[in-house]
Amino acid sequence: MKITGLSTFRKYIELKESHKMRSALGVNNGNEFVVLRLHTDEGVDGLGEATITVRWSGEVPAGCEQVLNEVLQPVVIGLELGDFTELNRRMDEVCSRNWFAKSALEMACWDVLGKVRNLPVYELLGGAVRPLKFENRFSMGAYSQEHAARRAAELVNRGFRTIKVKVGTVPQEDVARVRAVREVIGFDRDLVIDANCGWDVKTAIDCVQQLADCRLDLVEQPTPDGDYQGMAKLRQETGVKVLADDICFDLTHAKALIENDACDAISVYPGKNGGISRSVEILDYAAQHGIACSIGSNLEWDIAISAMAHLVVAHPNMKVEEYPGDVLGPSYYTERVVSNPVEIKEPYTTVPSTAGLGVGELLLG
Ligand SMILES: [Mg+2]
Image 1 (cartoon, protein in one colour):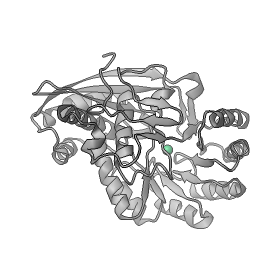
Image 2 (image 1 turned 60 degrees about the vertical axis):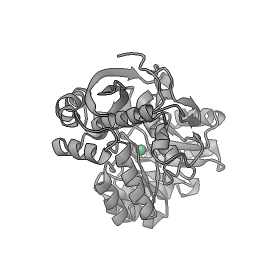
Image 3 (image 1 turned 90 degrees about the horizontal axis):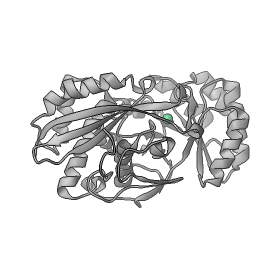
Image 4 (image 1 turned 135 degrees about the vertical axis):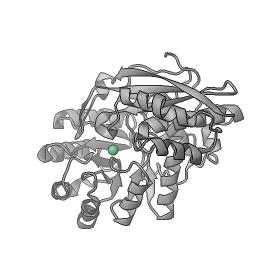
């Protein structure tokens, strides 16, 4: 079975009022998506999604569509479905980076393969190594102290046992916000903070030390891109556990993080890492070096969230029991786009056990 072409469309979706995000990356009221349909010579189509945030990956929706249609499509036409090494090689040969665009095409290949073999993607990946229903953390924006405290109480009521708070804004406000959340959630729940590269190493060490009595269970991406030594120093000087996220797009980045002793865990997900097969490469490499992985999020919609969920249940090094991830994206949005959406009942997500990505038909486009 061979790839014969692809088609794409774009759609902007608002976040629910209660889920609008503020972080070191700015304010986020909604996201633009490129939805992809992959065509094959056996008439079976696959679905893919690029979740686009320019501040995150440098990709923009129009550019993503152009890359998919004009750069990647010509080199993948005629390719045998299932040869992911060759797919990645061909894509990289004509296009550097553009991880989210590549992931849309790659996940659509998994969708087709599963549909043809009548197997869910997690079976194609070797089978489920954890229950199909798994628990998530909630990622809260960098709100005012009062707003954060109110939100934390709501999240506790909704059953979240791990709460992440965005920091990396004004250090004094960051510290006050985190302290307010810890006071509300108590010490029976885990507290994670995420600076999205927004602190320098001195500020990171200073803020973490000020919060010593708040028991920070994990500090996500404290320092900017390239500052591996800063991350290592934060770990050494404060003893806090560090999760790498925003600066790890590919295996080269994962290797640099591990060689520099920069983190305790790495956040991996198909969009950011260029697809499911590329994510598996990082997960495997990290496992060989004793580094756990978790799953981050770029607030995916209905297709990319399914790719994430399949990967979570299929890979032993996706240690969501120890480091819960954010596989909740579609619950942030005002609309859903497929006939069989991934079940999200906060704090749980359940991966579909139907064939392929298992999301059914597109409801628009
Ligand atoms: Mg993050």
